[in-house]
Image (cartoon, rainbow, N blue to C red):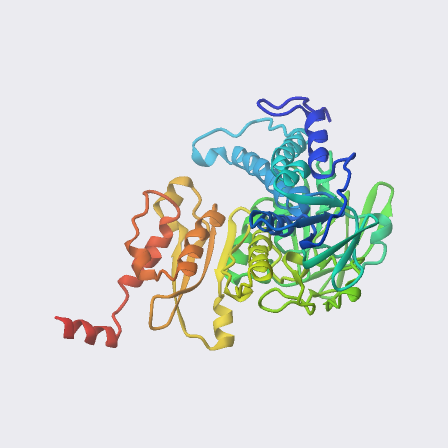
Length: 505
């Protein structure tokens, strides 16, 4: 396909590729020479490592940052940034096809230039990489080293032949895709998030293994860009960690986008036949076979603990669960901390950054901040989006924590109706007997934006009664939060509160 050399207002294609590599992995970079003991050595320059190194530099301490690959880690290079850029393009084309819903005429010949989508993605990456480039980090007072880091003792790390001594160290090496153990798949070849964004043409037929956030997001995006997508999920529903109502809404949306769905299904074998990948599927004992051009595996991630020689640092770890940390993010070596995907169950960019701030404060300022105190929301960026914060209803059943739930369907929200985006709901859980918000789920077009207000309320201890008094702009889809809060205020008064009111009168 022909690639446009210039996108209006953007850097030309040859330039942004060199700019990106020059920022995140400079080819002629010379590592500094260690000079004395570092106050903190940060291993891994992904989201968590960058946040930790920058915070340490802001505190004025001597800090080293080691990266074996590309600065920015998964988020910038093979994760959130490239995927959300492609999702934005896919959403536009879906809206064009559905123009009839809002009084328009769908294009008779909708042409999608996948090469220009990829070009825009690289352009975005290059632009964002400028803020975290190796020279920019050096200017901020951070010694940047490129190379494989290995612990040599409880207080030293070796990188590119140099020995770095430290008072404290922080491991932020992230995670990598889990390789599927399916006969024939290695020979046939498959994609993961680490190479799917290297595609230069949209696959004609794509098999997606895994119904988690990555699988669902990219399955929908590629389907909207013209692929015939088949998604395979071993579980009976998508997004096993989410509420069943949310998973059902998403499943319906994927079907409408033309995705072929196989739940309770496993891949038993893969082989090639000419240019085709032949995939055998098993569901309820029945075997079927599909032919595809590419296979995308999104079945999980493993922590990057290999090659670190953690034994030399007396740091306990598991090759599947990652590095063991306490609630202060300290490892079994009190001088070494860990953050992000290498040790956390919640493998999100914002979780890595938040944990980095906790670890740096505890390591360098004798802080006692706890990981368990963090309120971490998350979002799956399908259409509609699915966002959550706090506890799920099913958790309250296990913990015997009584809650009251207030639900507002999006088809009761004026702005959702005017936008023609009535799928989904806002569901808010409060502790029984009071208005303290303990959890919330939002399923809506922009759920990732809407959930932030509820995260703030939980973090600041703002009850649902106070939320009801907040004046929201009208009309917005976030007004669903106010409607749920108003439902709380108009619910029957408890006997205790009634007696209090009577006494006051």
